[in-house]
Length: 390
Image (cartoon, rainbow, N blue to C red; front, top):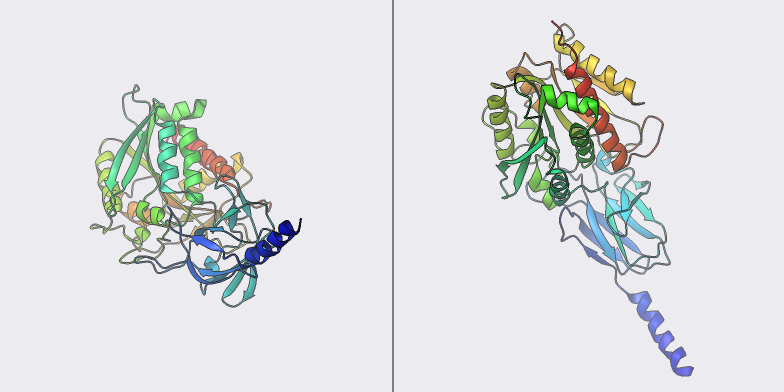
């Protein structure tokens, strides 16, 4: 009994002196650690500005060897306050995630307090992660669908494949309307990929409207444009030498953008190009509901009314009333470049998926984003399969 007591006395100080361990060496991970105070269960970090990055938008790291009997306090040191996530997520298995609320400590310090948890490991991220491997696994899961054709659009500068999906009923010949959808031009905007999954799921489904769409339309979808930055855990926003969503011009810098433009030009000679959509996500640093779309057309243009008709259909199918952002700038954004290059299309737009809260103040989840994407695809089917306005 004395030996056992002596052993426990020795063991207890060792547990108090145990050092917190952190891993940032895995896919999509990102963090620069400033300081660790193991005695107080505290970590101080900032998102790392990896290769050619200029904004601290994304973090994702693994923590272990912490004290289970104390809350884990994680302090983010970051001057870009609108990019500090208001509701980051944590998980013990990378499958089931929970949100916690940020607590502002000072002008440039934010505290995230993870409650006492009986687990050896915690993963902590700015939002629900969606990795390049997640995308490839998803594509594999739907690859046998008879209405889906998968191919490689481009090879990224880092050597990764950029997938291209084409959805249509190839047994139905004749003229078809065409829609192009791209997603994840900004690598940190993971909600965009969950929404895009929902779009794909609906268009591949046995729903009568999906069948009508496939018989009369074709959809080309690039579900992850900036694959390199997603894979390496870089933000992608305002990166050097050019942001993906500022690279839409006659001679693009990025392989993926160049190939998208080439494919659009080729496919538009075969099909009737009707709609272009660029799926993004809003800033994580807010608790205000913001589900929005960009209307870049002047009020006297037919596209102005077309885009209103589209979102009116969407609103009747869901409780979301998207906020309209009127922006007529001529910068090299995807929606603007497509509108100028193909002025006859019904419309082009950028969609901003909400990051945190719905209009009735529920927390967004991956499944809710998928459901919203499904409704967007249903809206596409209704809009594109109705008689075309003269």
